[in-house]
Amino acid sequence: MDVARCTLDDELYQAVNFSALAPGELGLKRQFLVCDECGGPAFFRKAAKSGQAACFGARPHADDCSIPQPDSERNDDGLGDDQDILANPGQLIVVDFDFGAQEIDRHNDPDAAPNPDGRGGRYVGGGPRPNAAMHRRLSTILRNLIASEQFRTSRQILDIAGVGQFAVADFFVPFDAISPEHSGHYRGYWGMIANAGRKDGSLWLNSGGKGAVSLVVSEPMVIPLCQRFDIDDDEDVAGAYALVFGTLRLAKKSQKKFVPVEDLGFLTMRLD
Image 1 (cartoon, rainbow, N blue to C red):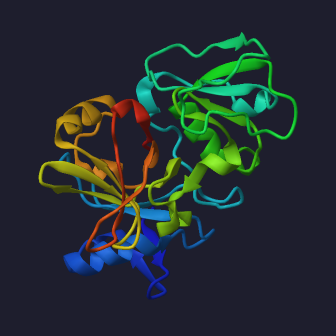
Image 2: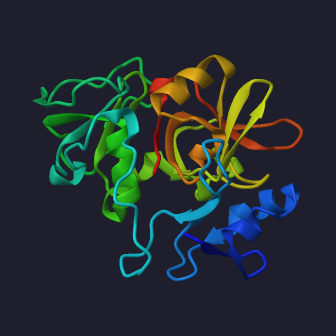
């Protein structure tokens, strides 16, 4: 997009003019961008080293927005589209953290007990325990979180090895709904990344300003992360959607909210 509206000052900006803002002002205002036509959440991407000009984008646009979506997206994990989880709402969703593995459907023993060593390892559904399971990667789960309110609010059961079983609606927390009360809680935190920054070798994937949550990728994982998602420049992640399974932390002095990425298998991103 060539233009976007900043809700902080209610100004309409051309990308070239927005890129000329002072760094502090730009860093603040890029957290408050929307599509001027449909109000969809927007992002700003600085000019890239590859020569790509500064631009805006929105993900997603409203269905009736005249500004077209990109014809394609760089598919997370490079593994192609997967079966929609909503096609089998009665099945148990077994989370597959091996992003290179083939997804499968299988029938489980309906009387099998959950992992006794897991945190919260219990069935939390309101009906009978599902007797069939489908293994799904984080990339598939993220796509459904983005696209389907029905999935986000569903009572479908998620099984996480070593952790337990949870209803989808109780486990996943969008970035803009995270509060200090989530501190210390293991959840699936997800949403759009506004920008990225480096600190002491770590890569911080920021969802907004100082009060917003960041995902922290430690230095040893930064290069593998960039290779996995074909990231050439930190600006490439602006506008990406991310999902991490992890525990929310609060910085002692600033109370900054962040989720350390414990393993790259616990993180997926969807870049355009």
